[in-house]
Amino acid sequence: MNDATRRASTGRSSTGRSSTGRASTARASTARSFVEPGPGQRTLDGLPPSTRQDIERMAKQAGLSLDVALMDELCTSYPAFEAMVRRLPRARDRFDEPAHHLVAPTRVGALEPDSGKD
Amino acid sequence: MSEAASANPATSASGFEFQTVSGLLALFRSGAASPVEVVRDLSARIDTYDGGLHCFVTRTPEIALARARAAEQQWQRGEAGALTGIPYGLKDVICTAGVLTTGQSKILQHHIPQHDSAVEEKLKDSGALLMGKLTTFEFAHGGPSWDLPWPPAMNPWKSGYMPGATSSGAGAAVAAGFLPAAIGTDTGGSIRMPAAMCGIVGVKPTYGLVSRRGVLPNTFTFDACGPMTRTVEDAALVLGAIAGFDDADISSVERAPIDFMRDLALGVRGVRIGWVRHWYDGDVSCHPDVAPAVEQALTVLAEAGAIIEEIRLSDLLVYQDCKTTISITEMFSAYEHEFRTRPQDFGLMFRNKVLSGALIRAEDYFQALRQRLWLSRELTRAFRACDVIATAGWMTPADPARPDKLEKFLRPPNITTPFNIGGGPAMNLPCGFSREGLPLSLQLAAAHFDEPMMFRVGHAFQQMTDWHTRHPSEGMTQ
Image 1 (cartoon, rainbow over the protein chains, first blue to last red):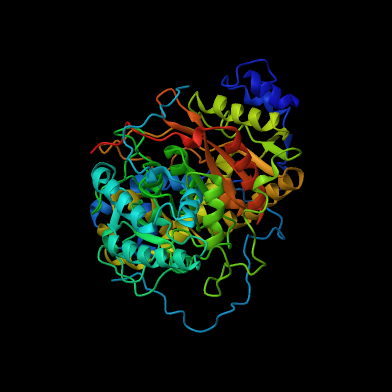
Image 2 (tube, rainbow over the protein chains, first blue to last red):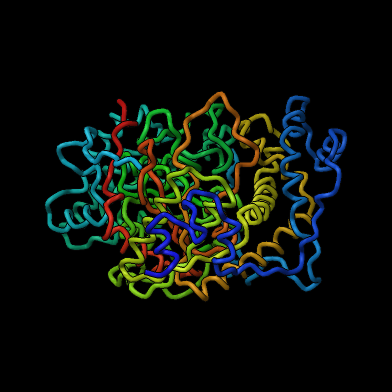
């Protein structure tokens, strides 16, 4: 049994605290890291949150026609998603590509799938 | 941790309800049981208990019996296929020709597809028996919801508890002994989370291994169909029947067939397991019984000869931000027409979690895609050093049902999501019980198309433990 598992079997971490003792920061130094510090640490976190007027304008630009109740729902839920999107790293190298791929479609005719619409 | 009872009052005299796929095939092969008997037995069990569990949106007993009669003859003639006579259910986002396929949504409440999905075609060809369409969350997202035309599924382990999302009916049905196997879909953990909460095995295969043709989309670039069973061996059997290239799915990968049973008996001696502890014991707060259960499972594997090394990957929130930005953007695009024309017909939970996708800018979506490749490379580096990555299957046991409480717009980060970002295979399997008597789960993941290695480790674990042989009783009410 190696060290990590020996700790697991005794329920103790390398810090000597219980494995449920939330000592992750101290333990991190003992774990082999595959995280590469790299580009993209700058985010949009510092922007002010969108106002209700901003959200209504964006919804209109997106072609949504929502009644007051549905707009209220969107204005309640959107801030959490906005904060999430703004946490994404932005300062990437220009050649840092997205996870896209395009393969030549084997089948080029109509697939005649179910439309999924009634 | 609780020693969950294995004595189960909810068992029948025939004992088919907790037979595994491989066990049933052996019974059919020897002539000790027939598919027709099994279908009748399981149907009676569903009649008795599904009123409380709500696993099924639509049942298909006539289809199952007709196929069972044909299967019986195939076994007698020695012409049985890989899954001849095995009952199964499909999550109700998987299209079935002539059989209602609703996506659990009012939007498709009366939708009867003209074509089978690729998965249903393959299962039919393999001789398996469709028992029905299984409860999910609306279009496999959001929820649990109580404002849809059908109630959410419930957990057979404890009355009033949820079975997890979103292949919830599939997880509950397999755990309850209604079916030996079901097919779910996994976009951020929707096979593995209910597998964890229901104490069964759930497999998200490598993206592109199983065709998505005819599966109502959640997120095009993450969706994967996979098996939910009670054993790893059964998962390998079922995956073998549904995997394969499909030229009608642009993400389908053409490659030589994989024998998923190939390495099951090899054991774990010398297998390198990277143990990601900070995801469940640091990045998010987990139930106090999770860490000891996972670490005990790793001890079992280490004692069998696996080499365990603690590793560190990016924080769960980093994976989650990337995944959710991509998901809600793609989901909105898939259901944009309905959001423009009849948004009120979506359930509140789905609307709340997807409508914001309309406001995501193209540049934000592409920044998330760039982040996805960055994180995928991190996982690739890790899999060059480890044969398998192990972590918790979920951060908590099952949650109590709260119809009065709206689920948060964004949950705490999912421990399953990183492997959707990476695209490789991942699997949850039972590894203990919480103090409340609810199942806990170990998650294993492997490099792209290395399902045989993942199954090898999971099968070895199940050969050394008996968590997968425990069955629920407390939530099984008539």
